[in-house]
Image 1 (tube, helix red, strand yellow):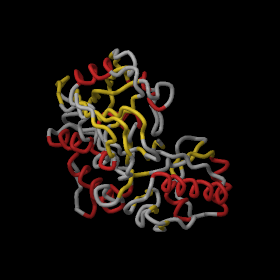
Image 2 (cartoon, rainbow, N blue to C red):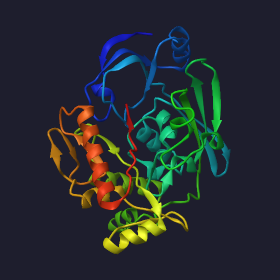
Image 3 (cartoon, rainbow, N blue to C red):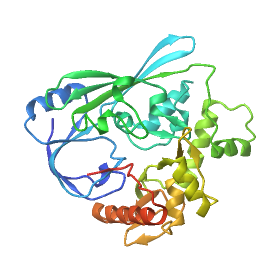
Image 4 (spheres, helix red, strand yellow):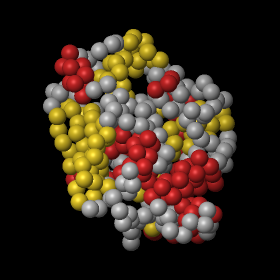
Length: 337
């Protein structure tokens, strides 16, 4: 294992924030991870995978372990079911494309989401009506302090909206090394209920879509709305879409009759955070190198050399404005470090 000191993390976070790690080790196998945890168990350890769902606001005085464990395995369960396991260091989008190329259905709506497989369960990533938990079976993880391996079932993970046990009770306790999904091999159940997907399929005159068609539609939609982190630093959706009571929504609808919404259940309504931000005048605005993307107000961006602190201050300004204008509290989807 090779330790790098005062390592710049600019290329290891999709916001492109220039902070340094006092110590840095790239982990290429589970064996390396176990050995590293054993040798450096007294150190302050920080886990870094794709760096796609975080905002780094300061240098990290820690031993940063960059999880780059590769590998994908499959196990046929029945005529229409396959277990697919991916190690934590696999690029998420590449993994989804592997599944589609092998006609494994279930993850196509999650195409082009940045990050690595290992961090996907932490966030319970989701897009266009589908969440990771819908096809998740289990994940393997090592306890940071003891090195003990544990398998977490779907129930163990306590998944919620962009949430899991790994963001709450077990935050900072485990390192996910492998994730297993149950996917279909035929008779795929497609989720094309989101209007944007339906429209994209109609534009191509696709009347009997395949999982590849849905994936390509999602990719096209995301590319038309969201900036490429390789071109403009960002972490995708910065805020969660707030869920409010029907009572509060009806009050809001009286003063804003055109407000879009999604019914969650009989008592709660989800309101698009991007719409709230756009209505508050932030869309496309820029403060130095920190700004709000011109095509999607839900995305905060680093145009060049913004600091994490500058991005954070902008996010707080947005939260305060939304609270004052709509009496809604926006929660961050991105982890603030």
